[in-house]
Length: 385
Image 1 (tube, rainbow, N blue to C red):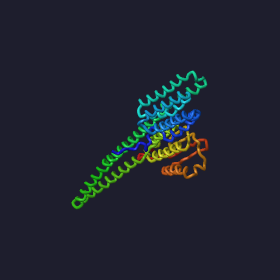
Image 2: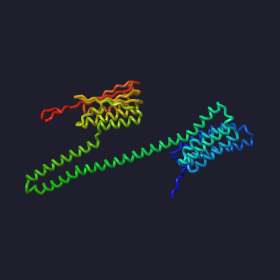
Image 3: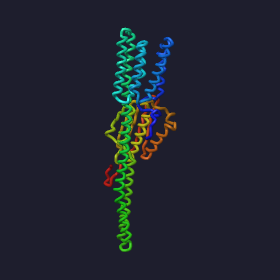
Image 4: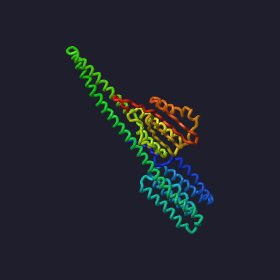
């Protein structure tokens, strides 16, 4: 069985190892006190401090023995607190974050209770020595030490839940893609399978009737042409359905994107008006322009509020997207990075004779208006539609 070298892998439940080394600089404070002692006592206590540092760093790395290593830190802190003075209890800041990285919940609870007992013991042993000003320093420090493991544990749990949520979303996306492929396969089978089978049968029949009954053969050929046109039309509709988006869909995506970016969304007449559903190309282009604009708001505007407004008149449909962000100036719009997105939207709008108007000022937010004319069509009976 292949053995994994865990020391070469950084677990997801602990910060980078260099963080543990950074905090060791604060051991200078207890070392200063130890250096005031006689030589023999100083050498022994220096070895204990070195042992404490090694145990502390090793507790970050080793997940298996972390529970025992934290209790060893408690014992060393208790030794220094009893042997010197109560200020050595501040060394409790070292095992506090390690407690949050325990493998199981019960290990965390037991070690957290050990930290609490350490603090209670210090208060009980030295409550006569602490002045009121000392208590103003000691009590907040103790509360911070006790709160750190809980806060770190909650943060770790939150990250794990986000990872599980991302994994679930990826699985849902894969399942949706598989379902979409299955649907496309069914649609192709239903649309093309029948039509191609019919064309094959009729072409074989036309071949047999070509000599015996030319008129019937010609009719079969016309049927083949009609069937092939219908099949081609069905394929175009299927492809159009795969590639086309709509304004309603992009509004839903805009809500999700803005919510994720902590930008509040205000909608005006969005639910009452939409680009003409009978003109899917217009609907698609307006939807794509909305997508590009909302993406720019999230990436570049630094806005806190975004407004989407729809105005549908007899002759035109207008979509207005406004934000209260930092805006921009004319020089920014002329740069290639800023111009490409605007150029793409203008090229899309040209396909339907649409126009785009953008108003922006530094510190004054940005407003983008898309206007697409609605063509009035006349039916065979002379009524407008």
